[in-house]
Image (tube, rainbow, N blue to C red; front, top):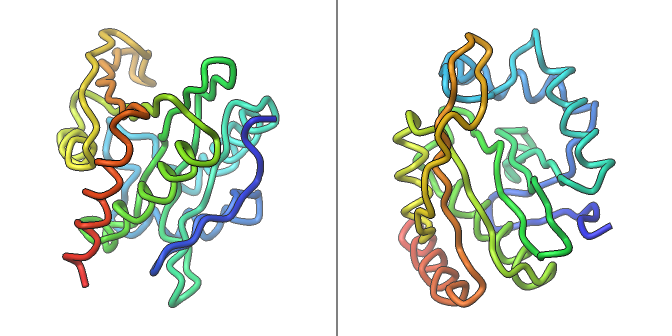
Amino acid sequence: MWLKDVELESETIKLIPLTNEHSGALVEASADGDLWELWFTSVPNKENINSYIASALEQKSKGLALPFVVVEKSSGRVIGSTRFCNADPVNQRVEIGYTWYSKSFQRTSCNTECKLLLLTYAFEILGSIAVELRTSWHNHASRAAIARLGAKQDGVLRNHQQLPNGGYRDTVVFSIINAEWLCVKESLKFKLSTYS
């Protein structure tokens, strides 16, 4: 398996492999801001948390994903989730997706810390040649956050996924390639230094 269980840790957060035992903590985290109400995201709530985790763990068992919970180190509280997904070990490509954080941790250092941990692991341990990040066309905050990381927009996959309401999602695809990694890494580290 290319993706193996690992814990990743920065100054204020820790990424721990997702398990069924995290269901209650994830529901509590998503309730901070009622995040499931955003129609263009797939944030879990108490009705769908079991299927959310089951789907993530099924993808993990196939070697396609490595889902994490995001933990605030000072309190030990789960504040969100993220994962490696759509892993392609043959071509050494992986996506970082399914990322969300409690409302009170948005626009903090949390996302930058998480992405620095995940990208460092992807490029320096897995040897990835490219890391993708995707979001809904309508999720303007996410698109801006991805661009701020240093990712470049590759394009838009139109009618990419069918939505529960019968409509279709256009997916914006960004990526960072291995030749860009060192500059992106320095930029992320600099951004983190401005939070202190």
